[in-house]
Image (cartoon, rainbow, N blue to C red; front, side, top):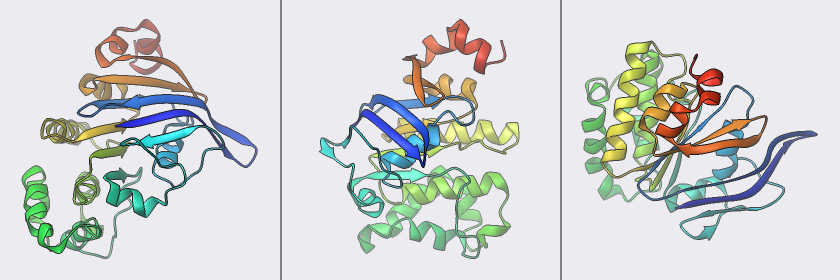
Length: 233
């Protein structure tokens, strides 16, 4: 579904992503783990058209998308739920969700809303509430629900557990697993390596802009290097 081949991304003179190559197959959860500054978010921004690679290619559904504008990728089936949620704070929950469906046919919006509400019943309870008054966990659910409104073939999630209490982290990861089981392919960037690897089919470790290790989620949980660096053991 997604094939990233030899991308290099710079911020001015800073070489942030170095010769990264990886793939995501249909139906998988693939996770990128690594410390702050490893290049995880930069990689997602490059895939979604917010940044450009100096080299290589990015293919989505067998089409090269290196130079496709970000807004066009949404209608192709690529949705990016960014770090920090980035919801519209002055709009209601339902208005935020409607914004996620701007590429969809009007006739599909109501049925899709009901699907989103089935995954996020708390959003249905708060559908008329101003988004800025929601808790952090509810805002994360809203950001994910908004991304789902575009019927993504591939959903990219950037740090969905950031800043959340442990009980909410468990809830968010259960929802991610449920979305996957319902048929959504997911590329997950996450600092909570234990949780991310526990649900991942495959994973890549990024260090200083380079992929240094890859394997199944189960293999990397058992890796001594990963345990020492990211799992506290």
